[in-house]
Length: 282
Image 1 (cartoon, rainbow, N blue to C red):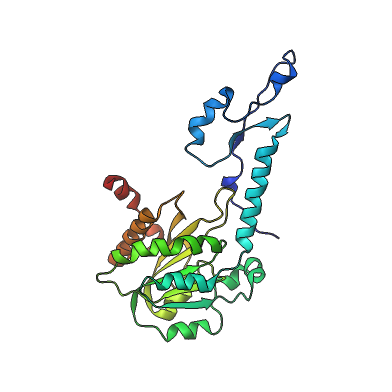
Image 2 (cartoon, rainbow, N blue to C red):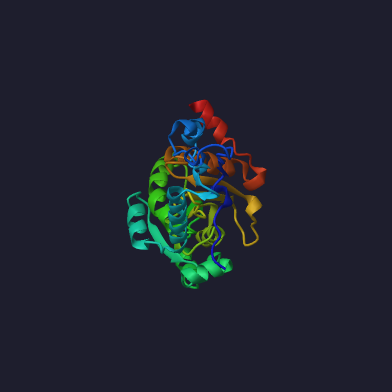
């Protein structure tokens, strides 16, 4: 069974231009985007990348939006199957001044990763021992995993961390950065335990949508164990310039990990009020 794509990025609404049978055929055709009849939707289009009020030809979509939809679908599929450029990502992260370790999950290849989610949550046989050699009682471990969009972390992880790490410079013991190939969110739990880190932040490529094949998410967990559930994690989603910008994402990450360290909790027990602070600050 192939990968599924986020339903919230499928066409939201189409606009039927119904006309009486008595009108000429030329008037029954749908107006082109940007024409006078299309103006009621112009303001809304400026606020969203969602496909709204798509022009139609009879009972079907017009050719241009149909081809654009198919291209977006192809890009989303390509993002899911694309392999991580591990060497490039490690080189980019090395500029941040921390050691960088590359590990892999138990999934041997991309096909296994997509078909066996459980393998993506477990470290490869040699990875735990390699990480354990760097264990030192850290406050925070940061894992960058390809997830379902390697392009997302290749593009966004380094800029976000470049803004986050200076916020945590004082009083934080940060583990070597870990790049995880074929990794899922829960792989960060195993990484944190191997490094003896109290908090883990997993930056990961999110499931591609038809308007965003390169969206990155961040999952934060306090004292993860082998039994940790998703309810015990905090999530920051849609990190990319067109979504949650790098500066705001770094602010939210720093705010949440600080709150976790102070309150010794994460997930549904920890209220994320970073959005309110961002609004007040602006």
